[in-house]
Image (cartoon, rainbow, N blue to C red; front, side):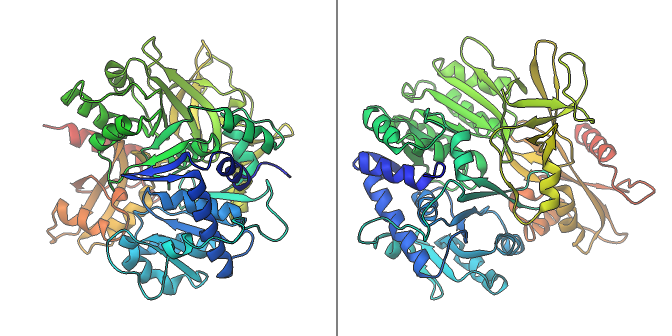
Length: 537
C-alpha cells in the first residue's frame, strides 16, 4: 500500500466484523457487511456509467445512510466525493457542480425539482442517482440509487485500474476565507493520519486494523448532529468508521434537540459532534425543560468545531451530565489541529481560549512566531498534515498554504493572541466573513441579493451578536425615494436568490449605508451603527 486509503481500511473492517452495526437511521440499522456490499454496488454503477479515477461525484443529501455509502463507493473506485450544501439555490448549485467538474450527482428525492432546474447548466454531469425519500417518483432523467446499491460486483471489490492509493483525493468544499465555495483537496493518507485517534501506525498496516477492530468489544457509537455536508460532521463520521464504530444519523431535516436526546439514549451513543452554541443552547434548554428524562450515561464525549462554544453552554451540559468530556476543537477544513480546549466538571469550560496545537503557531505580519504575553495579534498557522490546496485555484492555494522558513504551513486567516500562560485566545477571521451557526456568509453576496429588489438603492451587510448562532446576518438598507417596502418583503426577496441561512435575520432601513468616499463599504462603521440601532429603545 502507498499510504492509507479509506476504502482499504473499511473493507478490512467489514470483513473482520461483518455483523456489527456500521450505520443507524431511525429504526434502520446497516451492518458493516451490508455497508460494504451496498457501497460496492454504487461504485459499480458509477464506474459503468463512465466515471474514472479522480472524477468528481457530488453528494446532494441530508444526513442519511446513503451519504457515507456514497463516500465509501467513491473511495472504492478512486473517485472524489464532493459535498453539496443542501440549502443552496439553483445558481449556487450550478456554480459548485461546474467548478467541481462533477460527472455524477447523488441526490435526495426532495431535491429533484431543483436538480432538474440546473441540469442543462452542468453538462459534465452524466449520471444522476435518485435516493428515494418518499417525496415522489424517480424522475425519468435519473436512475434509482437503491437499484445500484442492491447490485454489487460478484467479488464485492470494485477496484480502479492501477489500484487505490494514499494519493487518492477527498475534496471538501468550504466558503472559508475565499468568498465563494472552494474545494479543499486532501490526500486520503494525510486526512487519515491527521484524524488517527485509533492509533494506527504511520505506514499502512491492514493486519493491525484487523487486530484492533477484532479485539474491540465496545466500538464507538457516534452522532454527527451537524450536517455531513460540512467539514465537522463529515470528519467525525469518517473517524467513527475508521474505528470500526457505528454512525447514527437523525431523521429530522432540521435540528430537533428532543430527537437527539432520545436517540442518544436509545442507541447508547458514546460520541456526539455539534457546532457550538447553535446546537448546545437548544440541547440545554430541552434538558432544563425536562430534567432527568434522558439516560445519558452512555455518552462520554461531546466534540465541537467551527463556531464559538460558550462557557455558559458548556456549563449547562455539564450540569445535566457531569461525567461528560467536552472537546472544543480549533481548526478548519484547511487547517486541522490548530488548538483545543477540553472541559469537564473539574473545569475548563471557558469561551474562545485554547491550548495551542503541537504543530501550530501564531505568526505576525513578518511570519515570525508571536511571543506569549506580548499582546501581539497574529494569524494562526499549522504544519504537518494539510491539504494539497484549493481545486483549480493556484493563487488562493499559494496564499493559504505557504512555505515559511523552508516548511509548508496552512494559514487560513484566523486571528489570535497568545496569553502569558501560553493559552490561545481566538479573535476570529480577519475578513468580514459572517459565521452564523457554523455557516459562513459573505456580506457582498447578501448585499447583491438585497440590491436586486426594485426598492433598494444600496445595502451593506454585517454580522451582529446572536445568543444562539454566534452571529446573525444583519442588513442595512437604503431605499429609493418614493418606494415603500417592508422588512418581510426584503427578507423574502433575498431568500428567493440565495440560501435561506444567508438571508438577513434582521434588516434596518437607513437614510444612507455610509459608504466611504472611494465607494467602499465601511463595514466596521456599519456594524457599529447596526448595534446602536438594535439596542435603541
